[in-house]
Amino acid sequence: MFSIRNSSHWRGAGGIGKLLPIALPMMMSSLFDTAMMFVDRLYLSRLGKTEMAACMSGGSACWTCMVFFVGLLAYSSALVARQFGAKNYEECPRTTIQTLRLAFWTYPLILLLAVGVSRLFTLGSHEALQTQQELRYFWICTIGCIFGLFRSPLASFFSGIGETAIIMWGNAVALVVNLVVNYALIYGKWGCPAMGIDGAAIGTVASSFAMTAILAWGVIRKFRQSPWKSKKMFKPAPEVVKALFRFGYPSGLTGLLCSFSFTVDVLIFHGISVDAAAAMTIVMSWEMISFLPMNGLQIGVTSLTSQRLGAQDIPEAERAVHSGLKLSIAYSLMLSILYLIFTVPMVHLFTGNDPALGYSSLLHFTVWMLRINCISVFCNGIYLIYSGGLQGGGDTFAAMLINVLFNWFATFLVWFCLKPLRLDIIPTWLIWNLSYVTGILPVWLRFRSGRWKHIKILADT
Image (tube, rainbow, N blue to C red; front, side, top):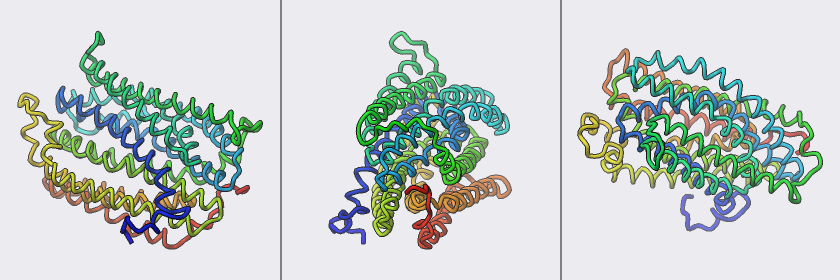
């Protein structure tokens, strides 16, 4: 089944050969996204473990504020893919423009939500300096999230029609902007002021602007060409808004509730000590190397599945999910081997050799946390692919319910282990990683039920 040399895995509309051109640029794009966050934390680790930890918790809280709306808007990828599969090409730009209008109106809601989320930092029992830096990073990134909102529907158009290379190149440019601006503003290079964690946040916003500008240029260029050019592309599309809220809100709500549960996990671990906060930040920085590219693979699976369903090709839609599963397992195994072999150098990349930075006290348990993390890498990969198939078919509520329940179950285990049971960080981390197994069985059973194959998303497809 998993022999890559078997050509039957590659052929067909739902084979690996069709999935890779869509998914690989999305995976590379997600990898560039990962690299930007990775660089933020790596640069700040040279200032101290407090700054590095504040970057993670502040960024996680910012993402919590916007993730519902990003998930809602990103479901336009499935709508565009469904129209593309049905060869209703003129409806694809109309869907994107309607989603951009919706993105504009969500920005004030995010700022209102941020006021409440910002108060969580004072409840986390963090040190005063860490709380101050968390808030500064959080507010700069939140104010600049308008670019991320517009980026979501723009990128969704290209992923929906299967032309994802521009997303990859846009992210590559954004990574370069992030590297340069962060280096200049964090350390005060080339005549710029040394802004520390504020510079990291400004660099993140600048890279998001660069990415959005490139995608906007690509979309404008595309909409002026056949077969996308249409006189009715700016006409209001209430059916798109209805479909987005009906099928996209579970995706957005999943992101919000699961991101919130992860933020709670971060706050609990960060509340133990600065060492625990720094250790978790190091491990989760490497975790992103696995999770976000697999999230890009999930987007590819969702897009190809939706395209095949739009073309009424149900067997190949199911094959698209199986193709994604094979790629996910291969990717997870490769990463797990690297994590187990190069654990110590990966940790030392952040801690360095300067004893004045105070990392020596956390080296031992950070190494073990990174090794244990291979469990969640493998489980997340399988879960994301089946969930992507459900979303491509429009079965988004079931995907939401499963995801939210098992993520909050994992959060409860973290709290229970660290607070009532008072376990050490290593056994708690092991239990947290093992809890991710609980999400695989229900999402597989839902996928096997086949309900996702027959859900009508848009009436004219």
